[in-house]
Structure formats: C-alpha cells, structure tokens
Image (cartoon, rainbow, N blue to C red; front, top):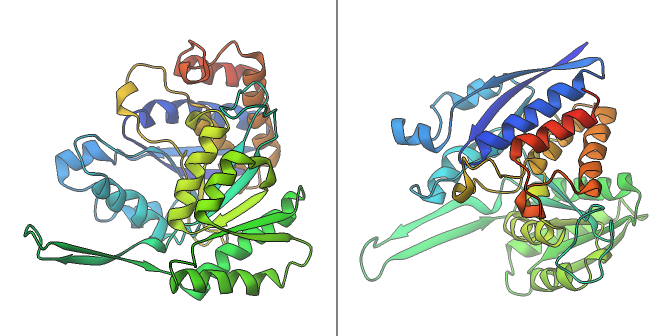
Length: 355
C-alpha cells in the first residue's frame, strides 16, 4: 500500500486552523482507498521567527527534502514585514525544490454567486499557470544610498529561455490534457518591458509549434486583467510570469466567489523534489482564532496534493464533497454567507466522504 510522507507547516494566522481540517479530510478519504498518509509537523513561521530570528532553521530545506510533499497553511504576520516572511520561508522552498509551476484553478462552483453579473456555475473554469522560480520575484537587485534622500532600490527581473519554455510547455500540456476549450492565453507586457518579456514571447512562439491542436492568444497583462472581469468565460488555461500570475490569480479567486475557495500547488513536474501545496489566501490575522476561517481552499489544495500522487479517485471525492456542501448551502463559513465554523465545515466534508 502506498504511503505518502508529508511535511506539514501550518504557518501563521488561520493557517493553523485550516490545515487541521485539511489533514482531517485527507485522512478520512484515505480510509476509502488503498493508500495512506504520514504527516509530520514543523513549527516554522512567524512565531518561530520571533524566537529564533529566522523563519525556519538553517537545515530546514535538507529536512524537507526527505518528504514526498509539503502541506502548508499560510505565512504572514502584521508585526513582521512581508519580505521577511516571503524570503525566509516560501521562496527558498520554491527555489530549492525547483517548484517552477504554480498551478491555481479558478472555478465558479454550483451554489456560489459571483460578484460578476449573470455568471452561472462553471461559466468561469480556468487554470492559471504561474512561473514560480524566476521572473520578477528572482530576488536580484540591491540598494544604493540607503536612508539618504537619494536612496535607490534596484529590482531586476530574470527571464531565462529554459525557465520560460518549461513553464509554457507545462501550460500547453495542461490545456491539451484538460480537453475543454484547448485554449492557452499567454500574459505579457513586451510593449513596455522589451527584454525579459521578449524572451517570454519568443519562448511562447517556439513552444506553440509543438501544440498545433491548442488555440493560442497573447494578451498584455492590463488587457488580461480587464478580460478576467469582462469576459472570464473566454479563458481555459492562462500562463504568466511570477508577478502577473500572482496578481491575476487573486482576481480569479474573487470573481469565483471567495479567496476561501482558491486552491494552489507549487510543483516540480519532474518529481525530483517534494512539491508544496498551499492555498492562495493569506494568514488573515484579523479572524485568527475566531473559528470562522473557510477551510475549503485548504481542503481543495489537499485534493490537488492527492491528485499529484496519482490518487485521482480520492481527489475527485474530496472535490465532489466540497461542491455538495456549496450546493446545499447549509454548512458554510461567513465569507460565503453562512454562519458555520471552520471545524464544522471540515466535519461535514468528512461525513460526506462516508467517514
């Protein structure tokens, strides 16, 4: 029987609460199939930083390399600058384990009302593929004249042919595998960013030659952002740089009802290293400890993790159980118009799985 060894980092804020429900559901669904999970927790994040001056210990990446996957809640604290939490935990994991694909589905589920008028269930059904290890978040740059009136900050985006081509190829393969619209949108800004974005555009043109059955379009990022609002039903698979993908997926989450439904995976498609599974939402310190955080994004992220390990039937069951709760509309957290607690939503998903 397959056993998947998972490193758990609950992180900060509501991460500690929603991860609990995600693990509960994953354990429950494995009871219906011939596979299991072994979860080991690591108390890294902002509280660890307050005690030790670092988000995780110096040997953390070596420790994580021994696991099949990483299940993460959320990272961020109001008393700690975001660049510290991001560069101290999330980005080192993504880079060390070459998680160059960030895959984020945006689906308008039955029972959910979009803030956009006249959108029905599944009118919005897209996946955004975000380049995840270079681009605008490559952390290349520096300061001059810090703390003087002439202070300068230089931030350099890094776009390599290999980095662009491999994430674009993954997006093409996904568009073909989904077999829905078989349409891929590339998001660019080469009219203003005439170096890195031209590397991106040329990579898109080259890779597209290998996928003549997939329809393509290239949109400037500002046009793409408008079309996410004006006509999101046109999109199937979208591929963008680190920054553009980050921004567009937040738009995608909101137009499909709630950040509390937005799942995400940071993938090494070659499976040389552990992939990391974390929802799109942040740590939401304003509702931490109140028991009202929506755990569905974490639960759906768990389904993505199960699917990554080939447990497709289990992943389908989790997704169907969540959709069933949304249609019933009785056990929902406040962000979806309900009054249920985080724990009660997790329990309801477990009951739906027959456990």
